[in-house]
Image (cartoon, rainbow, N blue to C red):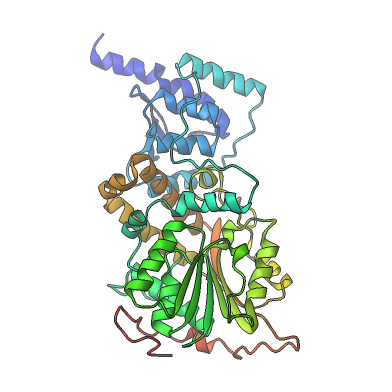
Length: 456
């Protein structure tokens, strides 16, 4: 048989053709992508993104872990790849699914038997493939202090060097505030503008006392102390983060302004001299880790920590009303035990704790820009990232950032700044009558070596 004849025969009898009817049954419609199997056979949409199934092990992963998690793990291990830009591939897949109205039916016994038979004929049946090492393995009671510490450590203690390469000089691992589209305006500028906006909303002035819960690598803590002369208690559960912030405090000679505590938010307590409460409390994208049942106690802590007429700013991710928030991949590899709720539910919980919500600002589109900046950095420095954390972890992050930007773009996820105040018993809040005070254009951010609190 000639080579052309072999190719023609393969086109009708290859692995792709054998699996196509099963996949279309599971999807509830035609394939929205082009699929190339390990034997070179192809099927699916001629103009769709090319998904390369590199080995039988990919099918075995899907048999053992159906749906999103199985697909994600097949990608993480390299058993499945997407040709070209991953984010564009995911976007095209989701667009095709929406346009065609594909809805995966729940397979019955017959469907499962047909799937097993197809896998058997393709030689894909076998023991469960090893779980990728990057997957979180948590134990213990959900949202116990020990389990929460392990969950935070899984993601945030990956490596300070990794995050230093991924993030900009602020080391802010949260949504930026993009105030300009002028040439030369970059992610670092958006982070400085976000930090200044938070300081303005919290009315931070020299000598004010700020509690920064979930301080990360200290972007807000260091900015508030160095730029505005604020006395900050910075709290994080991640040891790597605490070590980084302490080193930066020493390097910038801020020891008289900043205290770093590596502890659970439930163990903060009011520090000596703070019996009247902090002037302000911030928690920047930490509330997602608190848990559903635990969130009322968390908001009660925010209320207890701030003095009457003191302000609380919560920057937190939310999910769309009908969106799942997170998902099997995120919860297994990125943020185990994370819980997101619609924005309105978070506002209600803050109000129930006795805080008065005074302003809500949606930053959803800002996060698309922020995550895209991180993704470009990852793609542009892939070799350095692999050397730091290994190929599988880099693939986890490629999938996480590409999928995350798309989730914000499509409004399945959002992020909001929620500003609230603890009124006095008489109802007096001490807030300005308008937003003018914090909506004014941000002053240029102070850099290392500039005077503290130069603009008040």
